[in-house]
Length: 122
Image: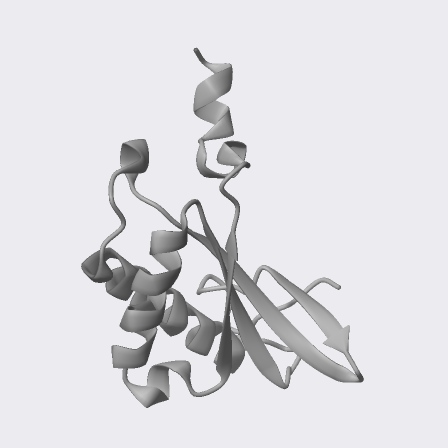
């Protein structure tokens, strides 16, 4: 389903799905640093704040209204889950009030965390 926004040019939701008759917006991101360096609580806090502000903005500007949003975070290692959960618990309620956090650990899918465009130029 294509999502339209007004005004255009702001944050967007990656896709929309219907679950049990409820429309849900989904934003996707990755919990990572360059060269697979340690992902810290500070990194998680910055990432979550940025994504949640975008989610709240896209929810206000969408022409399609949804029930909630999911923030789906891909993580390369189990440690990132703990870090994300700590950062999530410390965020202000208003940022995350209408969002569900889903974290997927993909330890055997490194290609999710590598810039595919950069690989083609090597």
